Image (cartoon, rainbow, N blue to C red; front, side, top):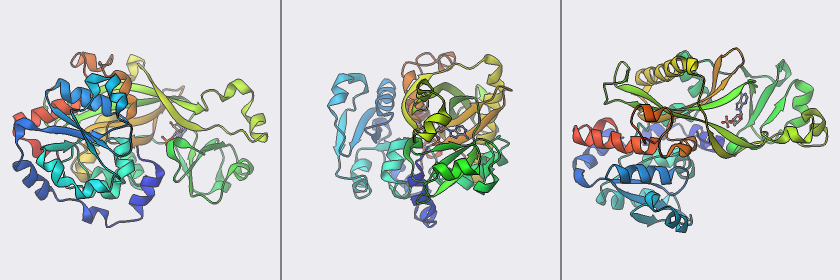
Length: 375
Ligand code: AMP
């Protein structure tokens, strides 16, 4: 998932697709790579421990991109420590240092923080082979386009309300630029909305879906033809988490929310951690079907979303599953599963999403199909 600020940056500049590094250029770079010495590179935050640990287990060298982060914490987790670090003053500097990455045979693995800090606009311009299809950013970063993608795929989403005067049910008001749900608030009618709204910020209004939040971590391989087959490639469901969000998860302890609101205490949705989840088994066909539909539609719309993605869902008490967001890269909710999950263990024991990325890279290299997973 990208923050709204990234969405805004991306949306405000529709020349971005034109600026995207061409597939030809990436293919040429890959053709010049020493394929036996590929280096997995990512930014030192978010899911980096998992990505590096997974890459190392699959026999790759690793490179950590550092922009102001402290790196000593990696010493505490040697199996997740990159072999080398590349120090930068800013993420923008990476654009000018692409050659160094290329000289190292580097493949960049994007994660949420990496794309957000670099900005999607700069990220698509980076002239370094990147795992996954960068075209997905165009569809994911624009709220209207991602809704169009998901709804046309047959996915149920929370109802969207354009005019605050028409609020006729509990809604969640989401601000543009709000990172990690900061400032989001719940309103049940127009007076409630007026009480909470900060008109200096751009906002959108979505039906508040009452239910349990599950974040489903999938992996789409355009290469594999076994397992849960799609029209091209196959789909895996590797794990599920739920986020711990402060303060909404705990605010009930202070008393009735309505009373607290009068005192100026609003629930907030800031993610502070992730908890592993296993869903009732009867939901699995539905969750796989949803993943399948989203991938099939992505193949039709922009050539396919490659590798890890996450559908952020709410399951209601009538077992409807509504998706409020899609994230088309590795999400931090996969971090509890560095040694596997109750789902990925049924595919291959000890399989994390980070390791699965490295396996796909290895498969693509061995089958001479790197062009199919790198853009
Ligand atoms: P988002 O930034 O869209 O991922 O939303 C942040 C948090 O707000 C989520 O993790 C959920 O807890 C909550 N949320 C988002 N959309 C909805 C919705 N339509 N109904 C209920 N809760 C939601």
